Amino acid sequence: MKILLTFFTLMCVTDTGAGDKHQHLLLTDCSDSDQEFMLGSDGEEMFYADFNKKKVVSMLPPFADPGEFAAGYEGAEGNMENCKQNLQVITGDFKDKPVPQDAPQSSIYPKQKIQLGSENTLICHFTRFFPPHVTVRWTKNTVDVTDKSTLSQYYPNKDDTYNQFSHLPFTPQEGDVYTCTVEHKALGTPDTRTWEVDVELPSETSVTEPSGRSEEFRINLE
Image: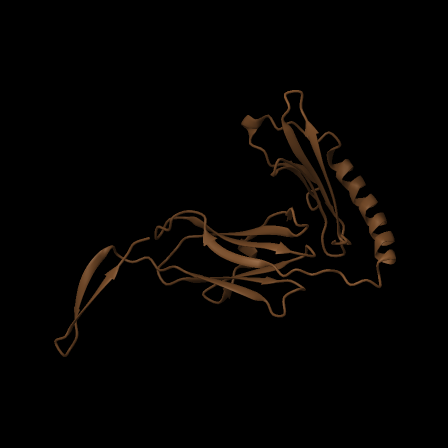
């Protein structure tokens, strides 16, 4: 069983009068490198605390009548203080025990079907890792573009590991090469995933070699 030294997660199930069951999640992170406070329900993120802007952000669309987080930003800060105090106690109790480590499994893919010259988003998804902290770096044609990317909150999996997403807006141009590199303490070396823009014309073309030999190839538009 994993000992959560950096994260404290509370999950509960409620039963409505109609017999419908709902799973609620309260996630608090107070490690040396991260701070996170998130509320969710039935697998959907509802609110999270932005500790840089000092406010609680709603992730639900307006038509869902999201309401507000009753405790406000002060409530998130209060949970963070409690978490730090608990972390000190737990760290002392388990200082001689090794912390389990699971390396992230990464993948990279576009959000929408690729069309040259049309704005899109590349998604780097890394999952089943523990402990939570992950470092992500993006490149375009070997040039670092990490500052143009965004990083989601951590999301817990049922097996006590975590998953996370990084998004990079881009406009695909033929031949561009993108990479997403994930670093985690359970990885021996950083894990780099590569995605190349390779969209060609949907036709058959006959190419004549100098020798007169004809070589035929088919190119598919994806």
